[in-house]
Length: 173
Image (cartoon, rainbow, N blue to C red; front, top):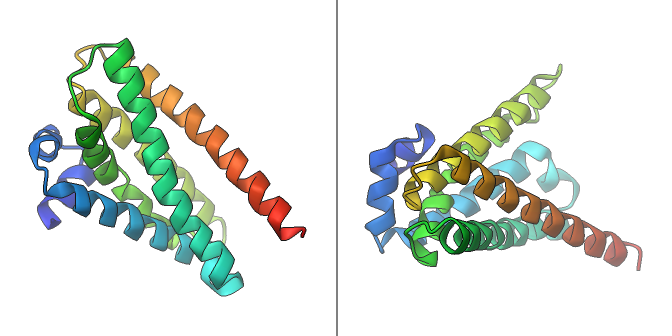
């Protein structure tokens, strides 16, 4: 798994190709998503402020967003742009593409360093999703991968808004 993580963090095309066909890597991709969510929770201070609700909801959201984004990438990439992948292949590769989010564990740093780290991690994630999407779907035109990732991100943001609204409503009860 270590080599797969390093390959995903460096956006290595050979790693994405290997993940696409490695059916055993689906569970590992799930673990990567969970570890990235835990690191983000620690870095964001959710553990200190609200262990039961903040931490738990972040883990649930990490898995839900993985499904949402992978589903959007699959539908747009395969159905619209005629990419070549199954849903499980997309989930595996995008699960590993979440790996840079683990560096959000350092987002607690003071003096604006935490904000800079969060910004850099966000940029890294966008690039990671772009290259992962392009590779898993075998899209030769970069613009198709870019549109696929942007639409997936938009769906992710809508989902996040819904989740935040529900949690806000529940918190007010």
